[in-house]
Image 1 (cartoon, helix red, strand yellow):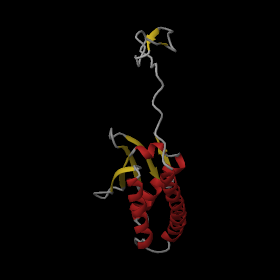
Image 2 (tube, one colour; image 1 turned 60 degrees about the vertical axis):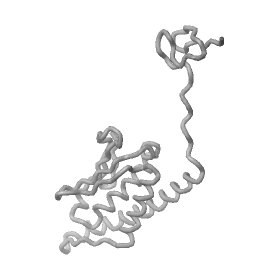
Image 3 (cartoon, one colour; image 1 turned 90 degrees about the horizontal axis):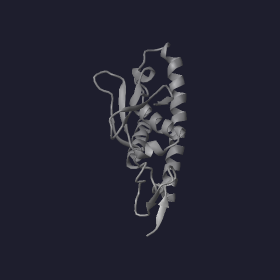
Image 4 (spheres, helix red, strand yellow; image 1 turned 60 degrees about the horizontal axis):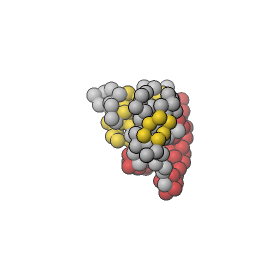
Length: 173
């Protein structure tokens, strides 16, 4: 029978043990994380590029809305093509596991709830910001809530709030 020495307390354990008999430390390295396929990486990369370009256009539109707001009454103006593209990007991100579901604002409260999936946690901060910017734009662009809207990020498994997004800023807890 082969033996393994505990890296913490130096106790000699049978190789079949996964944890030290004395201190409980792991004796075997954790299983490696599954890597994304090249195809998935390309799809996510193209999606992020589209999100970035869409977000840039939304920001310019938002700045124009701020300057025009004092000149005329605010009326919801949404480009139907961009609005449909945002819906498609949200659906793609949901298929990739970024979102498990998104609940739109209700009862006059300018808060959209986005339930984050495993791919959201695996993304970089910039990717998370881009994903969330599309949700924000989809629900609040061209509305009176564009200045006060909020996307609340909730963990799919625990239901706990893990972050918020508003005015182009993402805060992760």
